[in-house]
Length: 468
Image (cartoon, rainbow, N blue to C red; front, side):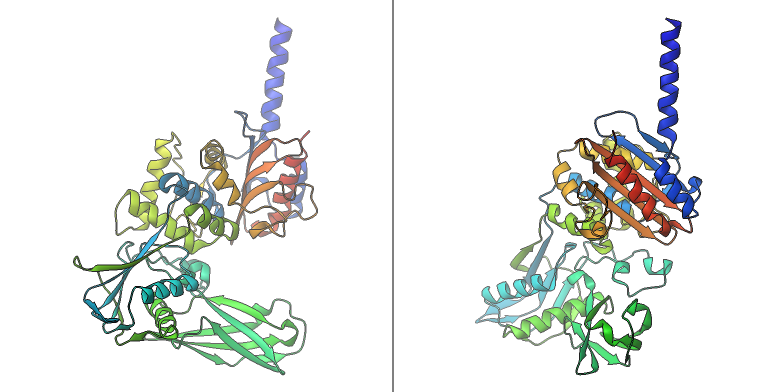
């Protein structure tokens, strides 16, 4: 009996020691990258077991970068439902007679994260079908579903015009982004904006030079100068001839002018007439509904959020949860309350969890590897699991994992979310190993050399895939 007890004790100690260790292939790559183990948290557990296989510093709060989107999108699926759709409605406050709208046209935004330029055109085509030809009043934008007070995330990297730094708006059109196309034609460089709006003025002072394309963006500079409802964008620096055609995405125009500019250009191209300007306002109680535009279902929206790590879209989702479950006009604090109350209702208590905007684009958002794994395990047991997993990038296939694990047998056998900001690199999600077993995997690196840890992260996924 004593031998049996001793054997059981030794086995248990062996299991604990094994669970506490970072796999050697991962440790070796971290050492080569100059990243100490104390700046890394790792947690690996099979979805059908109650204890981890790997557990290293899993109770240390870690900055997450974009892996925090895993929590926000899971919460969204359960709180709002996979079939949830954002509704944008168009009203008028006057009279419609023989195609002439005597009054204002009011657009009430409700936070649609993916209202593209094509959707705007479709809305206006439907507006023409509703009998509107000539709008005598103003275009009034009602954006009160969200409060207009948000953290300025551009402060943390000094890039206010980067699309990933765009702040939410209840009527955010075309992900608030303008594509600047660089085109080499007959030995000259042309720069064109898409969409083409008269509010955006391009000044091309860039030089077309010889040489390899390389990191072409670093050789260009741009200056954005707001001019009331318009903006001037000046491009300087060098553009290599070898680059051919390239595109740079920027957020240069304020929300209202951008939405109005898209509205006006599409409306006029459809043969409509417009007499007034635009302004923000509140939907009058006696306004009459003209049309409704529904977004894609949430189950499809989160595919774009997680596959391509879209910060603005997940922040729109985060605020929508706050508006639906706490109060409107919603602030980021309402989204925090909604998510934390939902976690508590599931018996998931994460005292170290810090949420700011739900996107991970933050120096403050944090969670432990153990608790990230806990909600990933809960998601796997949830009715929304199929929608959730299918929205995650697949190594060597798509999204932010398209170029990862290309030479590993694990390629195509995992659903993983990446996360990267300065000093933070993380990878988390699910791995389907070669024997058909499913694992939850979390690795978070908080270190000045975090960006050098990708090979170690990939090695962890490869190691899980080849488990005996």
